[in-house]
Image 1 (cartoon, rainbow, N blue to C red):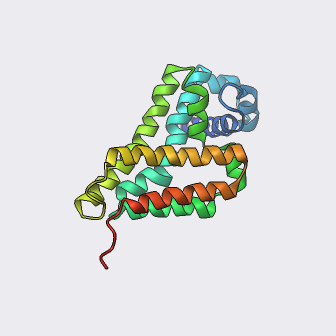
Image 2: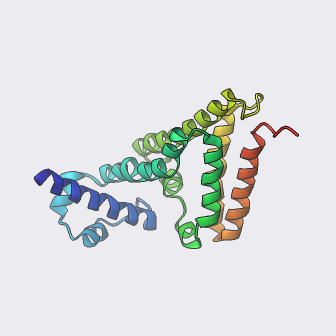
Image 3: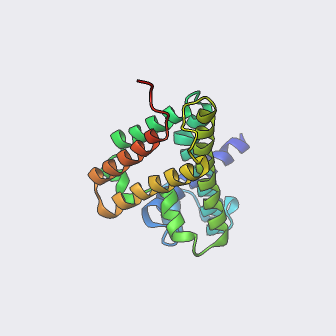
Length: 203
């Protein structure tokens, strides 16, 4: 029972910290706000996360990465037609993203821009997630290449790097412009790029 309560406390802290960091950025994130939102004490916070840096790194590893794993990585790994699944994920993003979500931008990309130049541990942690994302797409392309679904001249590594970069870029520019329309236009171009990697259907 004690362990379960401890886990619940830790989860509450991580979720509140994620919300605070997503809203204000890591450097401006307020410990006081996190404690207010959870109703917990400083002692409870520092028992789990002795420093603000450790809290931030845990948010990246256990909240940001888990969200991306649920939305993208796991679906690609488990799919029998991973490139079609990738296209479906992009389409869902186009159809279901709301302006409110674009207002704050991508949590991963926000932290990459803010913290990678400032903190080596953040940089390594964030790049680790980007590498997982790229590898998931590269693996999806390789698997479809082996079954004849992807063109043989496609450089799967380079294509995966471009897809992740373009995806994050679409969100970043939409955040800057506060434009859902431009987000959709950009993501549709990305979707067309992925479609162009496939072997054309026989006439």
